[in-house]
Image (cartoon, rainbow, N blue to C red; front, side, top):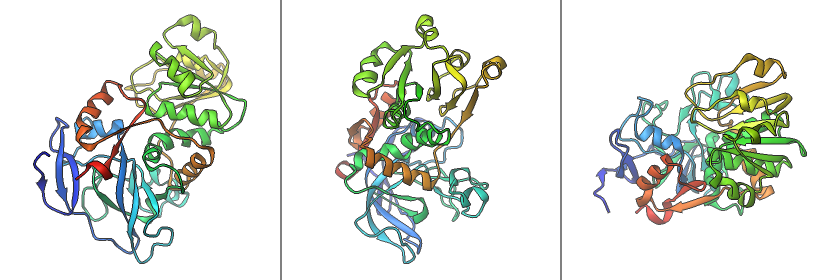
Length: 355
């Protein structure tokens, strides 16, 4: 194993500079407070955000950085005021670990939109002045409010991607009432988020069409994920055949792409939800006005909705498609993620490989 740097009882892998290369690292987490839950991490999903912050693509990375915000594991200790968790429970942590808890958004369980800013699971400035460190680590300590109960029997490795990729698409789908059987949904992009949008769409009873620039994704979309149609978005004839056929579109693509062609596929009053981050969004006003269509943005959901999503997935047997890896492979995995060479979410086997 590579030489560990740092000291402490929490073993992790961290990036030290903008190369983004991760290697073993040790540090100490805070002691368990009265409202805290300590989770021994078993698995952590690999999100594109891990690439962004390990490589300082936003210009705000605080090194050493321990990424990972799709965290699941087993509760090993709880604070004296914790009511919802006990030792031995399966629990998860998502993209944020704190918020003010008092503003109108926190009071509505929309903590991700906290007026004072939600505190990210890694690279965030916590209320005690420390920099948060994520799930590429042996354990984590988080306030009970920001922990989620993983339903009994739901595989922990598969639960991890739900805590970012899953909730990021589930939230707008619920807000825009996409859970109406028989309606039609378009999904742009078939990565970690896109494949979850397809799975939720089918679980909701929707007719799902996948849009992709890659013909190689057709078999996966139709046979593996159960989509009803597959359209090559660069094929004008295929696109025109879908005009005014969709009630909803979930756009997961972060690469720059035109929006007007997709807006024309919506029925009157249809909505396109953007969950990716292209560099710009350009639209002809007629794409909205002439069909009374709308475009909406979204982030991962609040704590209440995240717990509801986990329970929905357990009840309806909605499982992400994952590739389980050892922590020692994580640098190669991040490179493959950049090249979109993953089907459909890397999950690190922390329990069996972080030693």
